[in-house]
Length: 259
Image 1 (cartoon, rainbow, N blue to C red):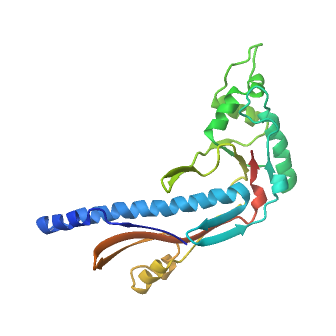
Image 2: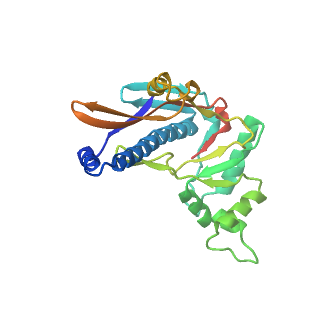
Image 3: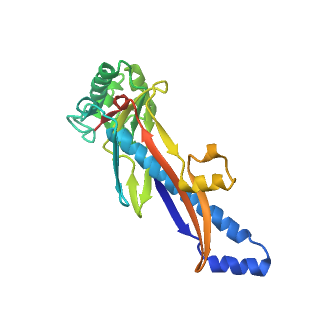
């Protein structure tokens, strides 16, 4: 269960404006703004759970009194690998050799090649300055001091490595900027045709109530929903978004974590 609630800001001012102008647009506009904010908050929490699952094959939750772990059973001994020399050491590390070796391990485990290499932008910067990569791009006796993204992609394609996708998801959690993945991690992901997993949504109590009142269909109860509630004593208006969700990965070994 995931939910986020916020009181209507400056509600008294909005109500006075409504009385003065006979126009309740300010209240409506503020409620819509709060709805969008709350929906995004719930979606961000789901995104963080997805990232957690991709990272280690588990969804681990310990917050607000809820303790839960869904372990899908990744073979961490094979599918979690670490470079002998970190790529930040651009003079001595061998990222191309690392990736080719790891790709063979992935193929041995799954019988299929990875379809995508997800990495943070800072690691792409390491590749641009890396001695092994620059040596590959040398021509006419000249080794470039830096290579661009197009050259990196061309080297990868020539060696049969999957294309790169940059992902730097970062969100504020309790006021603190939080990355979905630490910038030391890259991931081999499967091609689009491989059934990696999905995120399942169940019905929330709020959605069931809306369905009982006839506002939505029963088939619409799963998902992220928002409601506006109010009370007269004290006078308060709240906007709440809620969901019941869990990312699932029936084929966890189709993700290989590269540190």
